[in-house]
Image (spheres, rainbow, N blue to C red):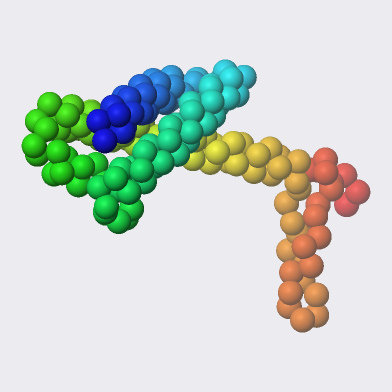
Length: 170
């Protein structure tokens, strides 16, 4: 059980470091989005994907360790959470305090990552809205206004004026 606990603490520490990297990348992404630097955004996105892949592997490893602990402790897999592990370790205060500390640090870092991701989502959405506005503006420059011609069912025919914007044939 002690080796499983050491493995769990090690994986949680490594997860925390990866989430800190993700937070730093998120802060950098915010500035890149503000600067609208597409090339740098591509590079940063690749780095984020690498960190996410590492996190996914660590998560799988953590889940496997928790499954092994549930077998050793004769508990259901579903009830094996970090909170439950902290309760179980009440006779081992050193490991209990280490687990509590890493859980607290990990929770705080996850909140920071979540907040920066929300800010970046809003910035990305605003950037997309601005691009859409620009595209609509450019399209409207190339399109002439519609005439007020109606067919016999009183529907607008949608005829466009000439592209020059000035009709010289009158």
